[in-house]
Image (cartoon, rainbow, N blue to C red):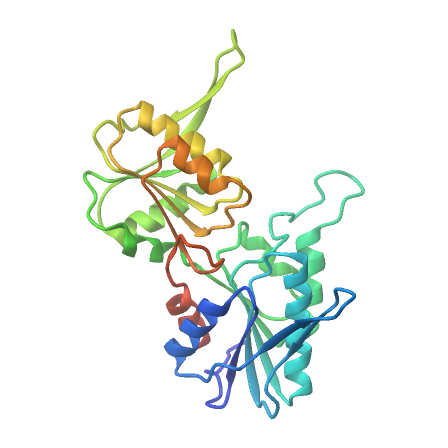
Length: 292
């Protein structure tokens, strides 16, 4: 199905966790940014309110928590109540997106469950850099995947003999996309090695000597920071120069940022799909291109 550009009266309705991205997207599209209010009743239930008399709405809401999932559903419904004939939902980050199968008998396919719920209130979904592209098939409305990883090249600056590294072979294509956008450097991925005498597991670049090179560890999401901090430590031990951790979705739960700092990371660069201090580049241009 071919979708036209947003109607000139279309309005960006940001979720409470997507304020910066919503504003950046409105600027990119030259679209109005809705004054959305968020409230909570004494019993903890949520309530959102959007401007009335909408013709078309673009809901932008990262579902970083269970409350954010409910807020998204309320925003969609409020847009319809305000008269929007077409609603587009932008998911900068899709919570539960990594639970794309029942890992143990009796467990839900949570990505499918939330995708079906979101589909009931929208005409179209734009999904930014999901962990698995196949989750787009769970939606009951047209869903377009937008890749924001190439945007991570912009804030990297000048790197010495750059080496772009994925945490594992499965994520190597992600590192390649960032390298291609940067325009120079080698690509490799980490491998695990187990010492069968001690049981200790270490990680190291598969084939490239990192000594003296600036290294960029690329992943789609940094959650607890455990995997990436191990990679940072390995690069420090290998004599790498500057070490940058780059990700699309900076969840950085708990002490993740401190863990990376203790491992010796020089910088963490990320997009604003999840709004954190490390969100130094906006995903808005990539999302706007999909909406135009």
